[in-house]
Image (cartoon, rainbow, N blue to C red; front, side, top):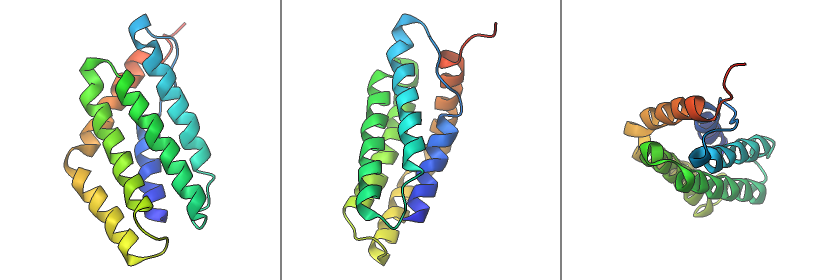
Length: 140
């Protein structure tokens, strides 16, 4: 489970390095969803990997909020947001479908990561850049 927490946290931290401010009206809900995802991710970092129920709950919340971010994403970044959300959902499913501390879980997490390996870094980079441009407050 530690590798899933690290992978998920790494993706979300990279994706959410930038806080959202007030963007144009069409992006306000997207930026709000990103801020909420950042908050949820921060809370999930406090979950002990040995508390399987808490891990499952944290991943479910994170996956649901990542899906909201993808739904709220403007068209120009929607595909990347959907890809990141799909990755988080795949990690969530891998955890939900297996028992803590088993080789089966490790294999499921590895398979989920491998499935997204080719495009994940690019999608995270694109999403991070878009969030920085769109959601960060303008310099005073």
